[in-house]
Image 1 (cartoon, rainbow, N blue to C red):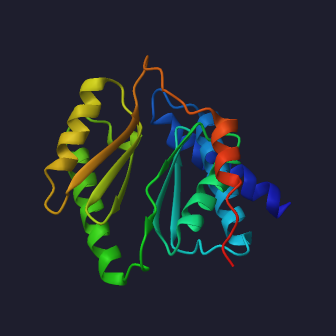
Image 2: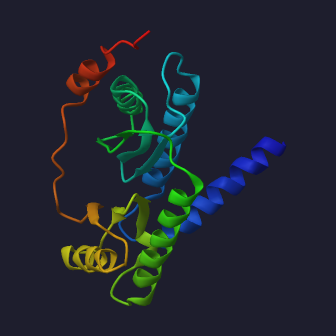
Image 3: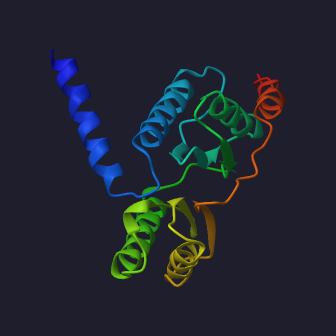
Length: 198
């Protein structure tokens, strides 16, 4: 009974969010959430790979992998697991082969993210709720749905003007644009054939 109530509450909260996002369906939002949970769960279960420093964000079927991993095979395995989620249409693998990040790095990124979010909220021509913002070492990733190419450009410009931003990566869908998608099966097979180093 409790589980049923929790599921209903989750459905209501997702429905409330998606009702504010024209062009973004409830089904797409649920698919993104489920894909994110599936990928994170698979990473936690992976043996022989160091994926603790990897972050996953799925928006509009685009999976953004960021964070750090100690080896190239860890980075590739994270992408392999990501392609295993059926709702994922595209993967952007921005995982760095580097040391784990410290609290100061995370705090700096959080400040940048909040400043970008603030600029989007202040612009009446941008529906900020449609944008997901991730920041990693001065690189801002914009994901989500824009009502027009002009709105997407405005959001990108706002992000680029925030102090500390070195680059903006735009992964935002616009109505009428056909995304160029990688051949899913080939890419997954290529990545999943890489064994873990002993």
